[in-house]
Length: 65
Image 1: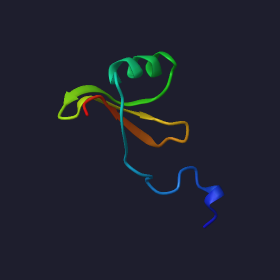
Image 2: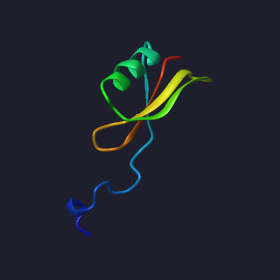
Image 3: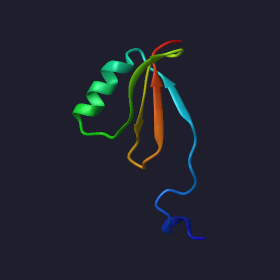
Image 4: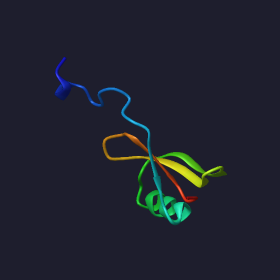
């Protein structure tokens, strides 16, 4: 298999990052036309949402330490 011929090999990794204000980052990304995978929700990790990076991998941000 040539990895260069595959748009997105594998399923990637689960990437979770802490942010000071997840809602504000969501709003900025959405306003900039970035793909939001899951809308912000309030959960055990605080305000949480997931967006797709330029390669299509999902990144989840949360704002509770």
